[in-house]
Length: 204
Image 1: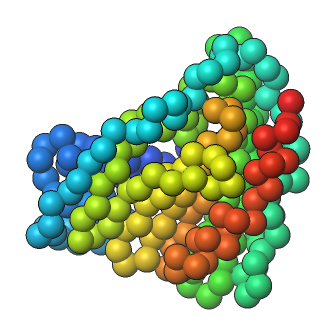
Image 2: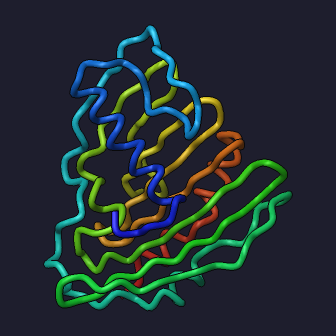
Image 3: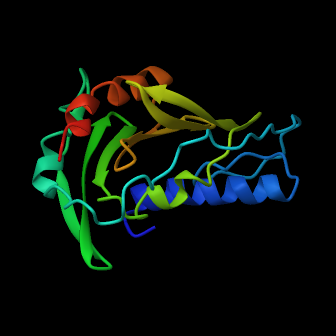
């Protein structure tokens, strides 16, 4: 990953660990950060990613990434009962072009959440680097599963006791990632559904 924030590194490590465990025939799910490893008694079921899910489509760098200030405008305010932090953004150089991202943290008591939006400009960067490597599986400790959010392909994960995350790929260019710790599935859905995916899809 080229985003060096702990909020973004940890989910990527979960992906890599989950894939390694599946390849080795192990049935344990990605562990919660700092939690003790346990061995589940169920068998993981893996499937290949859906056809057409990927970060190619258009030529890399065939568009200019929108400024991170534009992405910041798509970060929603806090849901009821939550407090939103100040949004941050960055521009990264890749090959002969650039890509951008913006993120915002949210808190409610001990619960924390974050939303990150990236414009890859069709480069294989950020969360797009691992998108095609994700596989569906479920164990007693959690799951990764495919879905759709506002018509766009998505991946959702859960790791006990209360860690959630959802990736949403928009037009094979933009990626929205929502993470949640010490919250509920309802909290995750509230954050996921608060993003204006139609507006992102129309950005040029």
